[in-house]
Length: 160
Image (cartoon, rainbow, N blue to C red; front, top):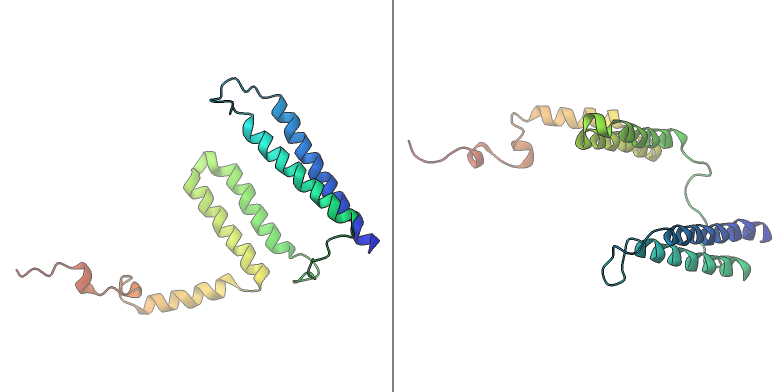
């Protein structure tokens, strides 16, 4: 059990250190521009303090026997690296292209790549599903019919 407690203790200590770093950064922000004592340094103070409190609680749990109520992990023993690569590529391409092609197009591309990564991690194939849905749509003469709208719901029914 001691082998499990060392990483738990390290996580708690790192959380306390990140909270302390946020508080140290908040000390360097001027609070003169705020209203009623709430300035631009207020939120970093709150987040840093809450993070430090959570870190202290994590350290206490690790020191008193570890996370006793933790369930056994589920899922695969190793990560799905292809899915991780697809999602990472989507995020990085989004960051690179957002100023060049715009928010909507770059976020749409990020979404498509992330879905591809999540579906590959789930074990599904995007191309197989897309082929199945395209054959169903092509059988319908109108795209409006696929959402349950007949020609009478969008044509004018006034007598001529």
